Length: 112
Image (cartoon, rainbow, N blue to C red; front, side, top):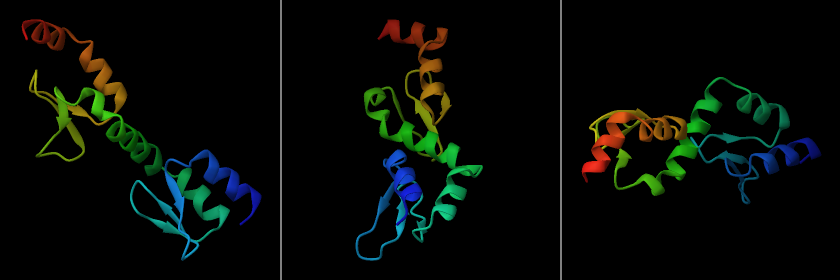
């Protein structure tokens, strides 16, 4: 494995793992496997879908602190559901923090 690929994997270590037995690189977000080549992994990271998948993956992993009031939507797997206001939210930290600063959320939370 070349140095550029090792540096790239080190930078994105939360999203990729190196499989020992096959030597392939596996994406933790969607399970996609790559041959250990820098150009393939770099093209995937620079693609259009990776930033969105990365944002959702980060939101899923940090959702525990919002868990009682904001949870995974049962009907829409790419959305979050606020049990306090009954609203659907985008699965991102920015959307959750913006929702928690809104008037409807603050007024409803004051009553509980």
